[in-house]
Image (cartoon, rainbow, N blue to C red):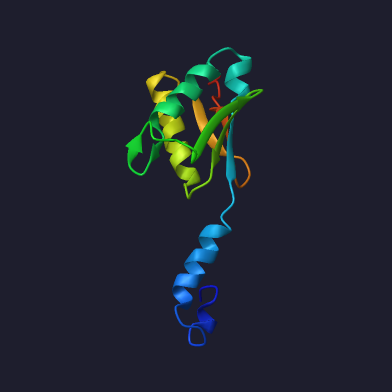
Length: 131
């Protein structure tokens, strides 16, 4: 049951009112990607990762259309993506994997969920075979 669905019969145009209320109360969400492990080993460059994200994030099915809706920034060893519209966290994981593949790092790094709004880049666990 949706919010306000129980009051649909009492108010005319209640569905339109619900849409207006939901859009007015939409908050900015900040997604973070923690790149501290590869940056400490100097395997990856955070500036190029930020540039890649700016060029490849799509808004309304168009790249280079970020405007005021999406902001990409860096703080310490993290990439922060602030979104004021609806965007899936999974989309950032997809773009991160795409960047790692382009940089030939996909075989060494993986993207792990870290909380509700974040990801972390970690190395694969490689066990050495002892013979």
